[in-house]
Image 1 (cartoon, rainbow, N blue to C red):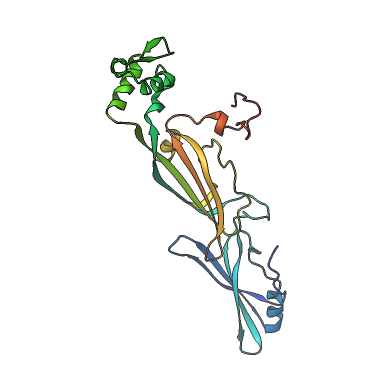
Image 2 (spheres, rainbow, N blue to C red; image 1 turned 180 degrees about the vertical axis):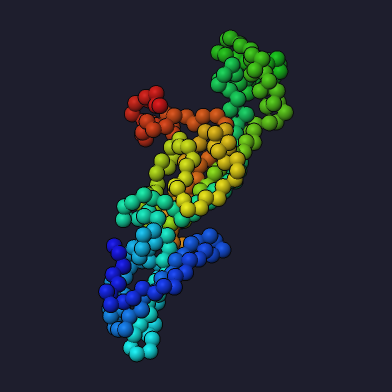
Length: 268
């Protein structure tokens, strides 16, 4: 909805554009009327986010009296991102990318799955015959034995040294976008395999190697929050966790298994 200014009010030639230390842009415009009461009545219908001029919406206003019973109305505006329910092309005021690393301690048995058989290693770890275990063998049944292959022996040697976990560090990319009105969407693709992306913004701050970091990993979206800031704007926070392998499509893909599992489909 547009700000309704009385037809008797005159738009002043003086306008003011600004940008604060946080790169928030502003625009100030004034109207003068010989009737203070006419301006005061008009302000009763003002609402934050009303369109003042093309590309600018109302953030706050002040009305002061001038000699002769007139009034001076000052409209403080912010860029129109059209991110709320008003339609239009969504564009944030600002988007800032940050990155941190998270630690994940993985079992040494995570190396299984290729030539290394987890069942074989677990049977070897449970073997009660010390001589048999020292020879990298184990009871496959009560009466038969089997031996670890070369890949399994390599893992078994780590276990002998007391190594049962492997430390891995994964990147978590976060995009904090600032909006003049509440974003039109959130909680999108949360918990699914999803490549990081940000809304178009008047200003985007990101590391120069952001695109190469994104292309180097497979990503799972782990956060998508929206909250109002102290200055009446809105912030959307989206985060993605990256791994150097692939996320299990049956657990995190678009056709992931339902809970409880009724049919073990292949996923995609």
